[in-house]
Length: 87
Image (tube, rainbow, N blue to C red; front, side):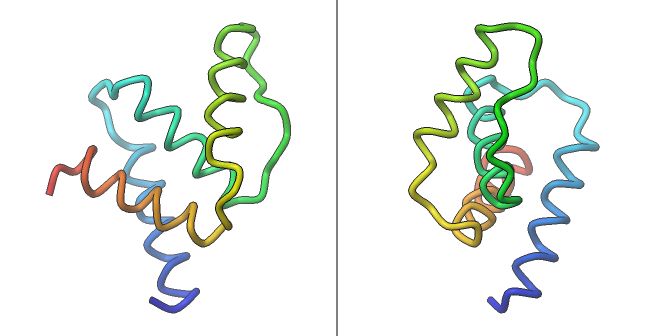
Protein backbone atom coordinates (compact mmCIF):
# COMPACT_ATOMS: atom_id res chain seq x y z
CA UNK A 1 0.00 0.00 0.00
CA UNK A 2 1.42 3.38 -0.96
CA UNK A 3 1.60 6.23 1.55
CA UNK A 4 -1.24 7.97 -0.26
CA UNK A 5 -3.43 4.85 -0.12
CA UNK A 6 -2.56 4.34 3.55
CA UNK A 7 -3.45 7.94 4.41
CA UNK A 8 -6.74 7.67 2.54
CA UNK A 9 -7.66 4.37 4.23
CA UNK A 10 -6.69 5.82 7.63
CA UNK A 11 -8.84 8.91 7.13
CA UNK A 12 -11.77 6.72 6.06
CA UNK A 13 -11.35 4.53 9.17
CA UNK A 14 -11.19 7.60 11.43
CA UNK A 15 -14.30 9.02 9.78
CA UNK A 16 -16.09 5.70 10.23
CA UNK A 17 -15.26 5.60 13.94
CA UNK A 18 -16.25 9.25 14.42
CA UNK A 19 -19.67 8.58 12.90
CA UNK A 20 -20.18 5.26 14.72
CA UNK A 21 -23.11 5.51 17.13
CA UNK A 22 -22.93 2.26 19.12
CA UNK A 23 -20.84 2.15 22.31
CA UNK A 24 -17.39 0.63 21.94
CA UNK A 25 -15.39 -1.18 24.64
CA UNK A 26 -13.02 1.04 26.60
CA UNK A 27 -9.96 -1.08 25.78
CA UNK A 28 -10.68 -0.75 22.05
CA UNK A 29 -11.14 3.02 22.36
CA UNK A 30 -7.81 3.31 24.18
CA UNK A 31 -6.00 1.39 21.44
CA UNK A 32 -7.64 3.50 18.75
CA UNK A 33 -6.71 6.64 20.71
CA UNK A 34 -3.05 5.62 20.97
CA UNK A 35 -2.76 4.65 17.31
CA UNK A 36 -4.49 7.86 16.22
CA UNK A 37 -2.17 10.04 18.32
CA UNK A 38 0.95 8.24 17.04
CA UNK A 39 -0.28 8.31 13.42
CA UNK A 40 -0.72 12.07 13.71
CA UNK A 41 2.55 12.50 15.62
CA UNK A 42 0.66 14.23 18.41
CA UNK A 43 2.45 13.35 21.62
CA UNK A 44 0.78 15.98 23.80
CA UNK A 45 -0.50 14.91 27.17
CA UNK A 46 -4.09 13.64 27.26
CA UNK A 47 -6.49 16.50 27.81
CA UNK A 48 -9.19 14.93 29.96
CA UNK A 49 -10.27 16.70 33.14
CA UNK A 50 -10.38 13.29 34.84
CA UNK A 51 -6.97 12.12 36.11
CA UNK A 52 -7.90 8.43 35.83
CA UNK A 53 -8.83 8.79 32.15
CA UNK A 54 -5.56 10.64 31.54
CA UNK A 55 -3.68 7.77 33.19
CA UNK A 56 -5.35 5.18 30.97
CA UNK A 57 -4.68 7.25 27.84
CA UNK A 58 -1.06 7.82 28.81
CA UNK A 59 -0.64 4.09 29.45
CA UNK A 60 -2.10 3.26 26.04
CA UNK A 61 0.37 5.66 24.42
CA UNK A 62 3.29 4.18 26.34
CA UNK A 63 2.35 0.66 25.22
CA UNK A 64 2.27 1.71 21.56
CA UNK A 65 5.17 4.18 21.57
CA UNK A 66 7.67 2.01 19.68
CA UNK A 67 5.74 1.91 16.41
CA UNK A 68 6.01 4.31 13.49
CA UNK A 69 3.26 6.61 12.28
CA UNK A 70 2.61 4.33 9.30
CA UNK A 71 2.42 1.26 11.53
CA UNK A 72 -0.01 3.13 13.79
CA UNK A 73 -2.22 3.89 10.79
CA UNK A 74 -2.13 0.26 9.72
CA UNK A 75 -3.02 -0.94 13.24
CA UNK A 76 -5.84 1.59 13.47
CA UNK A 77 -7.30 0.47 10.14
CA UNK A 78 -7.01 -3.21 11.12
CA UNK A 79 -8.74 -2.60 14.46
CA UNK A 80 -11.60 -0.76 12.79
CA UNK A 81 -12.03 -3.53 10.22
CA UNK A 82 -11.84 -6.33 12.79
CA UNK A 83 -13.54 -4.87 15.85
CA UNK A 84 -15.81 -2.05 14.69
CA UNK A 85 -16.96 -3.06 11.23
CA UNK A 86 -16.67 -6.78 12.06
CA UNK A 87 -16.01 -7.77 8.48
